[in-house]
Image (cartoon, rainbow over all chains, first blue to last red; front, side, top):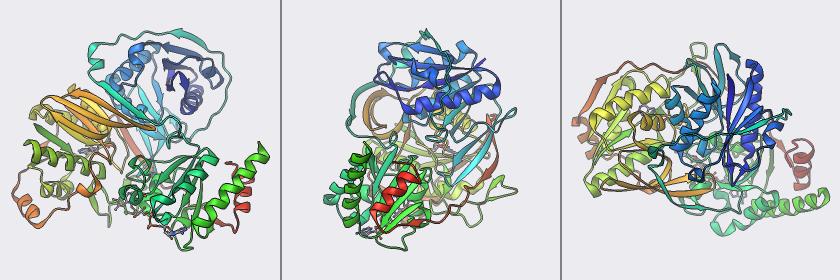
Length: 322
Length: 246
Ligand SMILES: Cc1cc2nc3c(=O)[nH]c(=O)nc-3n(C[C@H](O)[C@H](O)[C@H](O)COP(=O)(O)OP(=O)(O)OC[C@H]3O[C@@H](n4cnc5c(N)ncnc54)[C@H](O)[C@@H]3O)c2cc1C
Ligand SMILES: Nc1ncnc2c1ncn2[C@@H]1O[C@H](COP(=O)(O)O)[C@@H](O)[C@H]1O
């Protein structure tokens, strides 16, 4: 028996969330007195995984899996789980993990709990805490199944190092034709910008920016911080910014280290989606804006003055700390 | 084409979230329930297929009698028939098994669900349902066209989107973007009147075990007050030295 963790990679390189998931899996393995096996698909260098606590790496290399495919990936990971007799499987909260998790759960007749925020409270019965009501509350849920699938919430465990010597084995799952019933015709992805899902810092702006022509200063600030840009719902509804930037209860969830909200009032539906961010900064000219109640730091003032000043100051700061 | 739209009955987004019975149950007191926003996008797309391609549209919910007003609203928006499977929705897996049973029986070739319900945020029912009935599955779906048995779907991925070709039977987990916000329909008087006479069939549940069981809830610890600063210098200093995020 072992704890299996699926370590996602992009163009051969592991994502940060994958390493966090390994660290988390190691935490569970310690509770269960067992070891961590990582399974990866088309990753180039697996040596990094040992640093976070993997004892064994199952390395799948297969050209047919070069693009994500929920059915085939779930099939491959399920076979790895059987190979290892894994009773706990750790996934992340990426779009791909969320896509394949339900399929994997049916394949293995396993229970699945997403958005888990901490190590299991107990392992017998096996209970985990996870966020619900779009971060407005937490639930503690008990698994009733022999095999348990955990979707680890982003940024909820941290990149804990735990040097372990890891062995790597090639693993070739048997994939059948049904795994490839879906054909990816095209992928349209901006490669030069930070995505909201991966970002450590998110710079978000709302209707207070008055119009799309004023987003230059938001982009400058984001670029200076290496941050992703986001927006409130009306901003994307009006077409000032793309839908993919809409964050909140009905948009994307944000769980970054730092969230900077500029000219956003802080409606309950907006806050629900960004609550999981660790530190929140608000820039708003209305001292009564509800967002200040949910923020850690705030500046009451005109965004059109403050944002360029902040960008300048950060550039200076970066130059000094480089 | 026969379309089944899965409707999750959830607290309105402005609801205060509280718990009762020793923090083991969601407190529905004073809470307004609505069609899950993601499902509303899906239902709107289904209406497009009905009007442009002559599809029939059924809506379904797994839940107690309290969810019927939500199903009636879906009928008022234009669905042809509603089905309620009479059992509390205990966990995603058991809901998916109930839905799978009806989906097979009813011969639906397109099943539309949401990326996630905004209450339990499971994000699992459509994917499980697809696997249980052997249908294709596209999650985070933001575009869908169907021609005969062929479907083209657009899916949002981290940092972009991808276009997929697949075939019916198909299950999607959809979200904002599948239709324009301005296409969402508020039921009109005529729709509401018609909905009263449209069939709402209550079906008994099959035996389906749940795989997980939520034992308790809690709310996040209240946050300390905001620190207001006067200058960007001070802000940068605090973010670096105190919050340690830059
Ligand atoms: C079912 C439902 C779901 C929803 N889901 C979401 C969601 O997922 N995400 C979301 O964001 N919203 C969502 N909303 C909408 C939400 O209720 C608010 O309407 C929205 O968040 C407001 O956007 P805003 O803060 O950009 O605009 P406003 O509320 O108009 O706020 C603009 C703010 O900018 C400030 N401002 C103006 N000028 C300046 C200036 N010069 N400098 C600094 N500050 C300035 C103002 O003081 C104000 O606080 C949802 C609503 C519903 C009904
Ligand atoms: N009780 C239910 N009845 C019908 N459909 C449901 C139910 N619960 C969830 N769904 C569907 O599954 C989607 C995802 O829900 P969830 O997996 O609970 O996040 C929802 O958007 C609905 O389309």
